[in-house]
Image 1 (cartoon, one colour):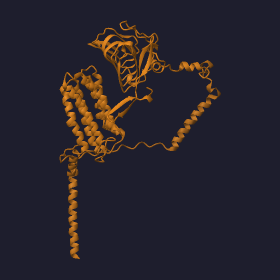
Image 2 (cartoon, one colour):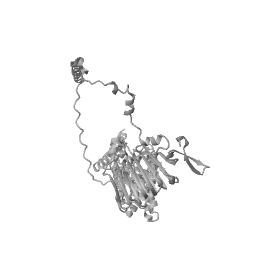
Image 3 (cartoon, one colour):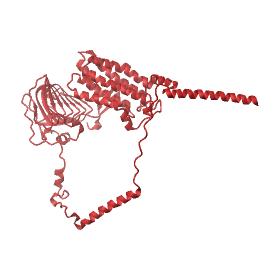
Image 4 (cartoon, rainbow, N blue to C red):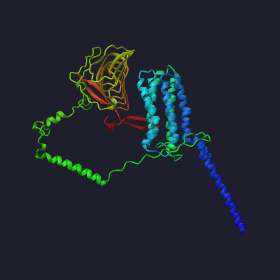
Length: 519
């Protein structure tokens, strides 16, 4: 019996020694801020596929893009610095997110503030440098950079990135067209930027299929997560304790006090009304019968809103070609001077769109070989007469205006305009509408191509000599082509907005307008 007790005492002593050693090592790790287990976890975190693959995008795709951007130089260097800071901020954010539980929406907005600020800076930098020789490069970045907003998209972040990549491709193609035969560095730059977006799309589809993978490798609170993947240095000072909680709110008044206050207010109101007696409504004016809308239907008609010239063009009779006082404009024959289109009636337009708020001084000036028409509002007598084939015309943020261009010019671009009527004689390359609304354009002589992008409402009136014009459209609606016939009459043909695609013989895709869309 004594031998058994001695053996139990020995086992107990050994267990107590082991427990003491474990508690001692834990306390040392707590004082130093980290433990050997944490070091191992940090090493494993650095090699997680969900983080390692994003690092690969930065090292193998994004860094070559930065090198090419700096090689081209100019405004592209400044832009690439913003993009680099954005990618680094997102890299750190993902490291925290995969170890943390998802916070509330307000907290997420605060966390991603560095990323959203860089996105806003990229967009503003592009807008401020429209005259830059690298404007197409800047636009390719600013149109594609919203792809990094996938962290807020659920459940389809992958398709969002794909849409932004296609939006950037429009300006990327312009860069290729401009520098294809001049400088191969720009061609490599386009390929590099496209590779960055495509690799990001592949990464998100693989690791964040339905949205950002919160808490996939940990359940910490976001603020307490350690994002560093290197081993910590021993001997660090523990963080200070959190501040004390705020004081409790002041006590609410009791129900009895609230009821008494409500009763007193109600009694005061009723007493003031009763004090007026039967003459409470004596001071009110009576509405005469001739001003009552239910007895005079014509008052309701005059008070209603009149259809705009755009609505009459889009839904009215065929042959209407109004954009001055709602009257059809018959194009003169080629070679004859274009009469001034001056409105005889005052034009009043209520603009409720935030994207078309006119700001900045009105401008109509020739700078080099480019005519700049900017911030014109309620002007219907704008004319550009001193032109030649080397001139291009850029019309920006004009509202409720009519512009006549005489002679032959190289190109015309309308950007972010609303309710603008354009009449031009002849264009060598193309006329382009970007981010516009309720537009009308009339060809007097010839134009080979008209391009319409992200525009709602665009009605083109052709001449007898421009019936071979080609139309390129993307992400636009309410488009029509009006073809002349007879004496000043037009026949309207809508441009398809909806398409149907099928696989033909298992070998190629065939796309045709969808007949059910009314086309």
